[in-house]
Length: 260
Ligand SMILES: CC(=O)[C@@H](O)[C@H](O)COP(=O)(O)O
Ligand SMILES: NCC(=O)COP(=O)(O)O
Picture 1 (cartoon, helix red, strand yellow):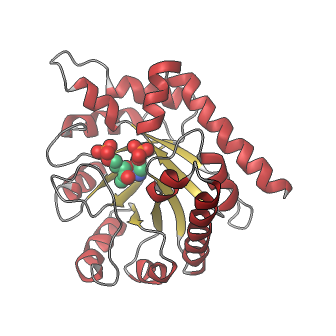
Picture 2 (cartoon, helix red, strand yellow):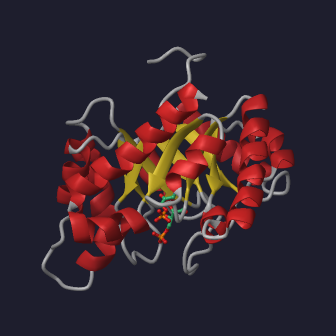
């Protein structure tokens, strides 16, 4: 592992929810979720993310277990399972023991993830679940809005990381002034997270256009988890070329940051 002082290159975790969404529209088993994950790992992705929502709209239980088996053949690559720990997430964590659990405060019928935890209000019910994950050797990341004042509370719950919810940044990206304003928010939140002893992940609506600006501005992003836009790109470019394009975005941002 790189030293804790040297800046680390951001890891790319590919979220394969949308492969499962397309697969579920027929009873044919294609496109294969595990094949998609394998091709992304072969192209250099550092990990795979899934969000097995209770309604099974995309990732289903068998996908979770099949991906866990696949990732056992990829030592050093990580499995990140997202979900609401007060719903179905903990059963997967107990049986699969992924490298990372990302706690997301979604309701069962939510269209998509669109907010982070409310802390300290949610702390009392999260703390024992965080402790259980850590006792199982599973790193915990809390899905959070970029609010600097909430980061100490996230750490106090026992989380190892926060995942900054990046949709507001992505929505502002096309307007340079709004983009700069959002980037300042995320930079401040990341700095507060680091000061609280947390590592920082990021995700939601990141893509090849907006990823570089984010990584050049927000310090020390350990991992980005990207699904919707990456899978959309892969429909045009293929999984391998797409993952390599996202890795080039990360490399360019990292090398740019090193020079500055
Ligand atoms: C937590 C988050 O922002 C995403 O990882 C989430 O998995 C998106 O869920 P859908 O793919 O169901 O929109
Ligand atoms: N945690 C974010 C994630 O896994 C994927 O989000 P998106 O790229 O599908 O919006």
